[in-house]
Length: 194
Image 1: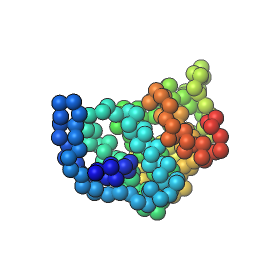
Image 2: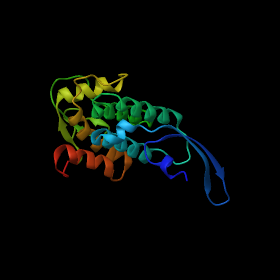
Image 3: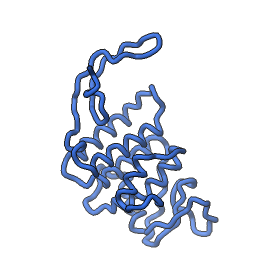
Image 4: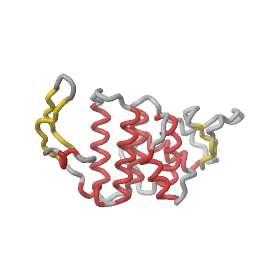
């Protein structure tokens, strides 16, 4: 009887009864259903992508109130008229910071640079690049660095390129495939190879 209330992307207030083997959901109050997010493919993809990353990096049973607040703020933001991929990049960077994996996007040079998720970000010149290194433009790296400390993404944020880049970082952090994130990138490019 609580099935409709427990669909993904529902903000709930619940009463859980702990049993000897399983916990039982005794009472459910839907606080918010994020209907606009559910009705738009790009918003839905961004939401599921972020929640998949959240699930990949947090331990079950540990409440993580700051991550919960971040997820609620992200879903509320993409419910409004906005660029959902820019908000996804913002939320990704906030979450990476919360879990202690704040990427280094370099020092503000305008030139392109090699980036390595295994090494934590931009590689210093002259460093032997690890196998996961890839090149990104100085403009993107500057935008990502600025976004890390921003309260919201700017209107002109290069969100599609950031989505490709952050996929590689999340693969490293999660240590596993992220099907929702990979599907989102594939829908943006038409290729599964990124």
